[in-house]
Amino acid sequence: MCQVDEDYRDELERAHVPSVSKKCVKCKEATAAVVIRVGDTYCRGCFKEYFIHKFRAMLGKNRIIFPGEKVLLAVSGGPSSCSMLSQVQEGLSQNAHKKLRFLPGIVYIDEGSAVGQSVEERRKTADELQAVFKATGFPFHIVPLEQVLDLPSSVVVMARSPAERPASAYKAAVDHFIQRDSSNCLTQREVEETSLPDVQESHTQSLQQLIGSAKTLTAREDLLNTLRQHVLVHTARSEGYSKVMLGDNCTRLAVKLLTSISLGRGAQLAQDTGFSDSRYGDIILVRPMRDYSAKEIAYYNHMFNVPSVFIPSLETKTTDKASIQRLTESFVTKLQADFPSTVSTIYRTSEKLQTACKSSSTAGHCGRCLLCMCALDTAAEDASAFKATLISEQLSQTKSPRATSTEIPRQNPAPVEPEPTAAQCCSSGGGEDCGRAANGGGCCSSAKVPETTHLKSLLCYSCQLTIKDMSSVELLPLYILSEAQRRQRRSQMREEISEFLLDGGDEGV
Image 1: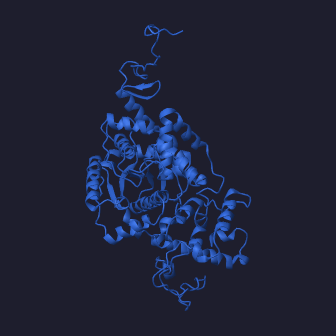
Image 2: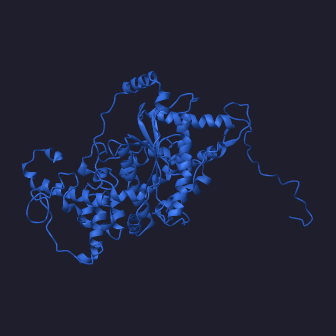
Image 3: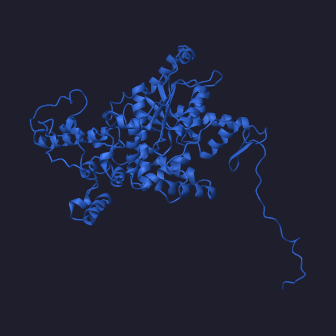
């Protein structure tokens, strides 16, 4: 039995804590400066070499970026994108062991209006990033998100992708690039600088109304991500870039994978999380930072003084349950703290997933989502979860058409006019061509707002949920509404002449 005067201090032993090696696991000589994982301790020099090699290996393994191509770096100011910019700058320096052979440019999308920042705060952020961009010597473009209101309809139309090059073409392009004086090719270029332009107050208010029309934070973040991609693609096309580099790291992609599944984007996982994304045809999105964890990037930026700028987002200072994206991020990061292999396991699983529907490269113009430009996943069988969800939604709706409409009624409602047919350009009744279609501006009837039910038929399941959470589709940018009208007219014309088409001949209508 226990005695009051017994002393157990000598018998109790301290729990054994595994010690971390103080030597670098690579050179075996220098003192370790960073611990990436258990057993992976690196000194300062070996960690930098390991970090740079991983970036070069990711680009060299995929061989998507050919020598001499113009590549646009999408820099948001965060640690991951700024680290990507630092790696490109390091790879193009004169003392680089294996120099990168593409021509970089930088773009920053100013989203201050979407998060409620003032003009002074947006100017201050732009000036800080402009100082970082000027230090690199690369041409840069600072684009406000309000530009999304003036984009052409071609942004949501897949352009013709370049012909696929054989494997031998990459080696031939490298030999041709080496023969030229690549250093002069990079230094003699005129450095283009585009600072933050003046934005009209009306455009800022329209964008805030558009983002604010989404009832939930989940829908607002999804809508903002879609608009950001549209501005990136338009900037790349207008400036002559063929590739866009994104700064998505391994941790971010692991969160994005689980979020996409929760939002019904399982069919688009290959495009949303893969190394390359060719949904836009002529512009390919690449993610060279996808092998880095957020911990590795934070260590590298701290040890080698990589500058970054904190910019608030929609989910800044929100609770864990504010949105699906925020809840998934909190779940993954907390699980990663107790189980260090969580992020890598999710990330490696994403590489094995393949979509069963038609790929983005083979889907036709009418077989693509109007917002995210991925292949539509709504053509499911009758005995499927998607069809069951639609039936359940239809049964739960009321019979009153006013209760099912999500549009805000106008103050002065116009009389209902019939939709234009194939032989009638406008709905004015005269059957004459308005002339705007020939000029590339679209028919004047395209300015009309499509019904929500018609708009949903042009969207994938996930984008349908986003539109469903919006209070009004009238606030969508004009280029989206006009493209929706054009697709509806083409679909109507296809139905009218379907009896006269041969098998498979309706793809070119």
